Amino acid sequence: QAAGKDKGSIVADPMFVDPEHRNFELRPDSPASQIGFKPFDAGQAGVYGDEDWKKLATSIAFPEPYTVPAPEPLTIRDDFDHEVVTSLLSVSTLNHEGRDDLIAVTSDGPDGNRCLRIQDHPDLKASYNPHVYWDPQYTEGAARLAYRIRLDPGARVQCEWRDKASPYRVGPSVQFQDKGIWIQGQKRMDMPEDQWIQVEMKATLGRATGQWSLNITLPDGASHGFPDLKCDPAWKETRWVGFISTSPGNKAFYLDDVVMEHRN
Image (cartoon, rainbow, N blue to C red; front, side, top):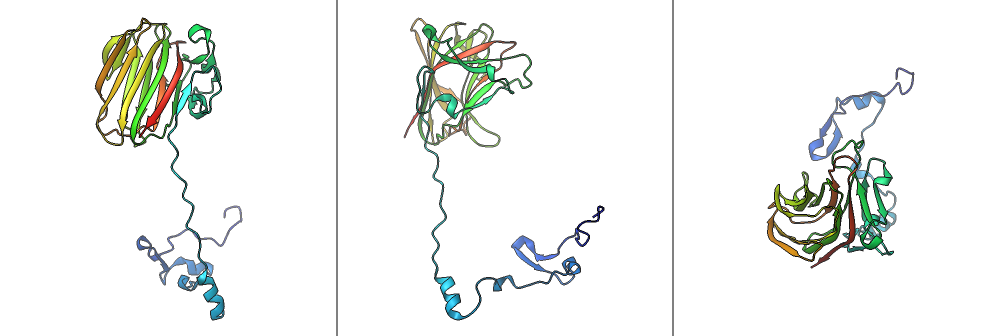
């Protein structure tokens, strides 16, 4: 208005009769009259004319609105050496603050095969970057995540499952750091650095149990099982799965043979 435009408009309470109950009729002293607005009966809106014409309008049957079906649960099987229908990177969100080189497929895998490298950097602003996550769409049944992981000396990594609540609730969660495997701040076993280990995480979904299980297989083939681990007692669905680097400096960790699957 200061520029000489829209001079006739008014910024004011329109003074509806009862907007909280969706009665948008105007009160007699509404400022809308000052700009020439003439109230009308919205109940009279629609087709008008002779009776046959109005009857035709009311006889039309409209289809029910299309309902988008819920997404199917994801199944991921990715060794990073072969093309697969659902690769890990194709369904994941990568957070690296614009440093594409920090999350990349490399030839650092077992026996020189390819794997996924996630490397930290001292210039990153967020302590939880870089990290990779995806939504497997698991709300019931049983879920399983298996992978091989190797850490540079001094690297720190967390693998976590979450729901979609706000604030979110955490289900299975394991930390790899300080030459050990930690759960809820407690060291459960030693872990060799710069060597590949096999990890398997399992949980039942659809009901709040506050429990999950973990199995670790070391390079020498020794297997260590941790049943009935605790998590948030209200957690019951997996809608976020991620690997988070909290390493100092330029430390990296590596993932291979990632499998995430679900059964009812």
